[in-house]
Length: 252
Length: 355
Ligand SMILES: Nc1ncnc2c1ncn2[C@@H]1O[C@H](COP(=O)(O)OP(=O)(O)OP(=O)(O)O)[C@@H](O)[C@H]1O
Ligand SMILES: [Mg+2]
Image (cartoon, rainbow over all chains, first blue to last red; front, side):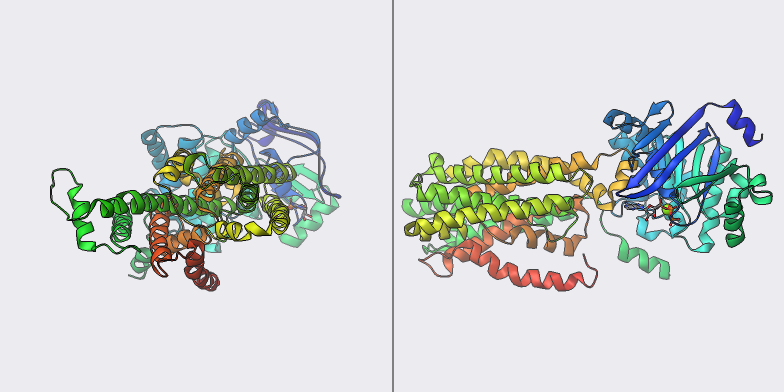
C-alpha cells in the first residue's frame, strides 16, 4: 500500500492548518499546514532548531500554539481543558529522555496511568502491562527498577507506558538520540512493529534508515516552516527543494 | 556477577514494608516512654514504668506513685508528649510534602508565608492583650492560625496568578515577598509595643507548653485532615518527581496534585505553628534523615517522616525541659542546635549526589 493511498483513503487523524507559534518575539512555527491520516507513519526531519519538537509538542498541547488550528481525531485543540484532557488520553508521547518513575518497578511504571487516569482495576492493568512488556520484548524485566535496565530497555518501557493508555496516536521526539548506538535498533524495531500494527505515528528522528523503511511520508522542516513533503522515495532520490538537497547532502 | 552486585545495591524498597513500619513504631514508642519517665520533677522512673504498665488492660500493680505524681505523669507529661507527637509529625510530613511538590530538597514548611503570617497574628494577639494563656478559647493560636492562613492565601493567589506556566518558581518568589511584608509589619508592631517583646520573642522561638489536653484537642481535626490528604498524595508526588511533561503526556494533572498537596501541607504547618510557635528545622532535617536511610521515594519518605518527626520533637522537648530545669529552653533553640549542624552536613552531602 503506498502512502498516497493511505492519505487519500483514510480520514485525517491530525490536521494542522496555518499553525503559528511564538516564544516571545521568536517565531518557532510559521504557518505549518499538514495532515496525518489514520494509520499513517510520518517522519519529521530538519536541522536543529527548525521547530520539530515544538510542532510535535503542540499536538498534545505541551505547548500552546497562538494562531491557526490543530484538530486531533476530530477535536480542535483550544484552551478548553476538557478537550486537552481528551487529546492527551488519546495521544501517547515518547521523549528523548525516557524519564521513567525511578521508585516504581517497570510494571508499576506501565500500570500507573491506567490505574490513576483510567481508573482501571489493578489486576486488569497488570495483565495489560504484561502484554505490552511482552510486545516490546522485555517481559522478564517487569519487577525490576528502571535503574537496573539498559537505556534501550528503559526506552522500550517508556513506549509500553505510553501504549498502556491505549492511544490512537503515538508521538516520538528523537526516541533514540540519547541511546548508545548498540541499543538504537531494538527501539526502532519496536517502533516498526507498532507501525506495522497500524498505529498512527509522528516521529522526529535522525535515523534515516528508519525513515526510508518505515515512513509513509517524510516532512522536512526548516526555520519553523514545512519545506517539503513526500514519500521516502521522492525525498531521498528526487527532492524538489534546494534546501532539502542541502540538508540531505549534509547528513547522508 | 557484576550485574548481580549492581542489582543488590540499587534494590531499594519501593513500598512500605512491615519491617519499616514496625521500626518506626518502635522508635516512636521508645521516645514516648523515655519522655514519660524523665522530667524536671524527679519521680522514680521505675515507678513511672510500673504506673504505665498498670494502665494496660488486665494488669493491676501498684506503682507506689502519689496522686500528685500520677497527675504529673498523666496530665502534664503525657499531653505534652502527645502534642509534640502531633506537631513534630505534622511539620515533618509538611516538609516532606513541600519538598516533593517543589522538587527542592531544601523546601521548608514555612516557605509560603506560614511562619511570617503566624508571627504577625501572634504578635497582634499578644500586644493587644487578647491572649490570656487559657486553653481552648485563647486568642493566640487562633490569631496565629488566621495569620498564616491569610499569608499563604495571598502567596497562592499572587504566585498562582503570575505562574500561569507550569513553573513553581513564581510561587516561591511570592512566598518570599509575602513573608517579608508580614515580617516587616510584625516587627513594626513589636517595636512600638516593646513591653511585650519578651512574650513575642518566646512565642517565636517555639514551645510545647500545654494546659492539659486543650491544645491537643484543638489541633487534632486539622492534623487529621491534612495528614490524610498528604498521605494519600504520596504516590502522586513520586510521579511529579519525574517531570511535569511525562505526567501530562500520560493524562495525569500535576497542577491539581500540586495545589492539593500545597493546601494540605500549609494547613498542617499553620496548625502546628498555631499551638507551638515557630519550631525550626524539623520540617527539613527529618525528611532528609529519612531519605538518607530509605531513599527518595515519597511513598516511603512521607509516612516515615511522620514517625521520625514525632519522635524527634518528643525527644527534643525532653531536652528542652530538663537541660536547664527548672527553667525551660525554648524548643526551637534545641531543634536548631541539632538541626543546623545536620543541615550543613546534608548540604555537603548534596554535592556527592546523595539528594
Ligand atoms: N520554551 C522555549 N522558549 C523559547 N524558545 C524556545 C523554546 N523551545 C524552543 N525554542 C526555540 O524554538 C526553536 C525551535 O525549537 P525546537 O526544539 O522545536 O527545535 P527542534 O527542531 O526540535 O531542534 P532539535 O533537533 O535540536 O531538537 C529553537 O530556536 C528554540 O531555541
Ligand atoms: Mg527537538
